[in-house]
Length: 137
Image 1 (cartoon, one colour):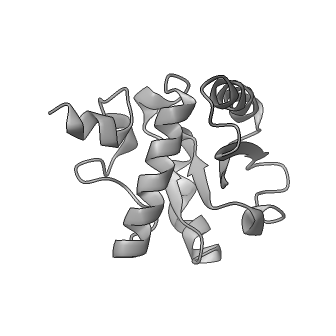
Image 2: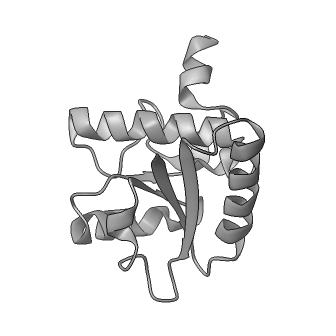
Image 3: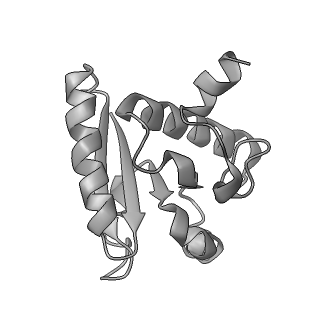
């Protein structure tokens, strides 16, 4: 099972997103394959859960914290969720991006990981997983 942590500032938007993603994952038959957990960045940080997850997906407004988190937790892949995707993507799309980001991180060592051409989360225009977006081109 892939365990994905979603974190935002106070945990308010990430907790709602994670509730939606877990429900969506179960409805789409992925309940045994993926679990989404949230952790508020501001209140206690992510350190107590970091070893129990496979990837940390940062809400777009935490992009400026990514490098310091990578420095603190270099053995964990981080990914900044593109702004247009936050709250819009299905659990399947989040799951696919997480899988592909983990693979990309393993291959390149880039951390936080980003897909080619997506260095700045606010400029990403896709509304589906990177995998689906590239297949549609």
